[in-house]
Amino acid sequence: MPLDLHALTPDQLRARRTLKWTAYPADLLPMWVAEMDFPVCREVTAALTRAVAAESFGYPSPVVHAELADALVEWQAQQHGWTVDPAGVHSVGDVMHGVDLAIRYFSGPDDPVIIPTPVYMPFFDIVRLTGRPQVHVPMSWDGARWTFDLAAIDAAFAAGGRTVLISSPHNPLGRVFDAAELAGLAAVVARHGGRVISDEIHAPLVFDRPHLPYAAASPEAADHSITVLSASKAWNLPGLKCAQVITTNAADTAAWKAMPYWETVGVSTLGMEASIAAYREGGEWLAQVVATLAEHRDLVAQAVASWDGVTTVPNEGTYLQWLDFTRLGLDVEPSAWLVEQARVLVNPGVPFGGEPRRFARLNFATTRSLLDEGLGRIEQAVRSRRP
Ligand SMILES: Cc1ncc(COP(=O)(O)O)c(C=O)c1O
Image 1 (cartoon, rainbow, N blue to C red):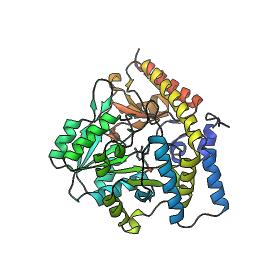
Image 2: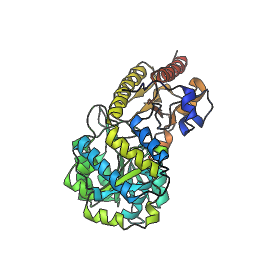
Image 3: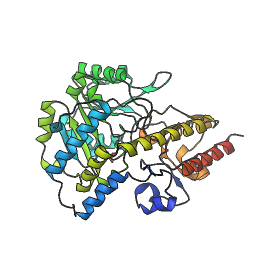
Image 4: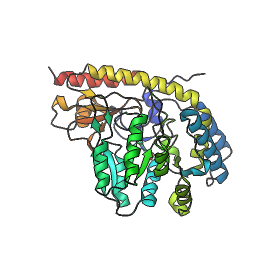
């Protein structure tokens, strides 16, 4: 039986006691951090209920890890036709921890990391914490979409870069990269003997074309990439702390397995049980969520098209919309202006690498009535600004 994805009220969402609905005053409509306002997949909550009844609160077991690796391998084969060796699946507590380890163990201490921007803001912090220099390469607009600037990435490698860190599908630009874009990037990276770390946490949340795993884009891509992903974004489980790293060649698999145990610790037992259920039994729920998100994506696009002074980019995946307020000519950050004028909370664009006073990111994974409310509030603020 399909769930009513629009059933939860603000009081119920606040009762979850998680970040999105509790960090700010209640009169602010939260359309910021990447949590979804939908009821969780019943197959996942059933697995968690079973695990709680069994008091599965001990340390994570290699037996459960092996089951999770098999579930992920099956999911990748079904969804993307990608054959993953279960020996190359490694558990970590969250995606950013996996990215951190991939940088520290697979590049030298002075090797610059190339980051196409704008991008999910913790990328900058994580790279800074590894001590590696970072080189920001703006994504380029090809007239229809934001894509990798291969000439600039090539130049960054020529200047000493060793690793590119990508978000694919892309947060916050909503891009789902096609085979030619990924193969183009792979060719540049291979030419310089570099590496790609591909954060594919949003892979199940695509609307118009299938996600293509970077490592499956070409044989050279599998040779030089490390993929980091999790069921946590698509099934809305980030507090359960469970992500996977996929290595796609024997040397990388051996190097990952050789890491000290304390580096990789952090995955939770309950998160593993929930992720197995998501990959094995969560497909129907996910299809319903993706269909609803696609409707919401269209509603946001229609609304923005009617707002004089605000523009956006076509969204192909993720439930995050990158909004451009440049033409409104604000003298403050658009997110601060929306708090004041619309009582709507979105993410500011600057931490993603966007220029000041131009961008904000809106989360549309909410109920239809809350989406209408949020878009209505923003529309009123925009109208009152433009006579
Ligand atoms: C691209 C991207 N990577 C990583 C994360 C966070 O993942 P985790 O909580 O597993 O570190 C997010 C969260 O929104 C994200 O958008």
